[in-house]
Image (tube, rainbow, N blue to C red; front, side):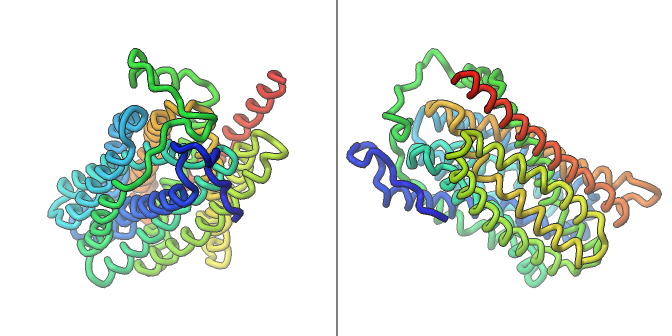
Length: 433
């Protein structure tokens, strides 16, 4: 991957140095990795939780969405804070909250206790996801932002994979409680480190620091205005469909491999985790670099790349979920994941570039609210519900095999929406010229 251009202008005292910007990117990426590790550590533990607590697939399906529901509620509050006050303190606070809640998950002695702990994890993680993209936009200039967000978001597959591996291996050898403890403790140290992140003036990388927000235009007005912007909302709706598919796959793939394909539990989680980390690193890095390179040919390259790669991922996802032969479904999973991860950096860069510096945290928070409300909140529950009610033998491997087929449909819809968004942007640019 090419080096991201240094922050400019270098002589401006308020602009962060290149060293400070890269150190901050590294720390934020490490925090984001832990964010996704804590989020997905529960997925490979579902069989143990199902057996020990006597849970149904529908109850299992709620363990990820309940976290996201609280995450959705908290994200707009952290977004408003991030656009008007300190950005380092809420990030540090959020890390501390979610780490303690992950540890409490390992102490749960009933479904209600576990569900409450997972919900609190969502409150903490909302701070990072709402504020970090806006902070990164003020650490690096517009040219090369797709690569910056690719680096930051490579933590998604790596963290998710580590969640699968920690949950699968620690859970198999030491029990599901130990897996939550191992996932939660490191965050306490990162919470302290986050207090030393730089917090440059908003808009410093976009031609000078932006003016302070007008107090007459409060948080609700900003969110209402964002909801009326067609281009922004089309981007977000595509992201919601993408998140629906990816969230359903992430929540149920280890159980699918174990129950439908007959893969041993520890191997199912570990193998899928290794696929996620490998395809995530390669796909996210290649997508970020390629999207920035293609900017010289099209101002809509971020959206074209996201749309085309996601559309191409849909048939491979379908093949992976319908073919019993490991010689076919394993390569299909790899290709589908690789193509899907290529859109991560470009899509996040497109979102921050389409709004002003003073509303980027709010825009990221609203995006998080919508994509989870329509995406990975309903998808794991819907898949679990369909599995519990499909056919003559609810909850059977055949029922789960049919339920997961909603995933490739959602991926296809996301690709179509982003391609349409790229077309609309190209027509708007041509008309302006």
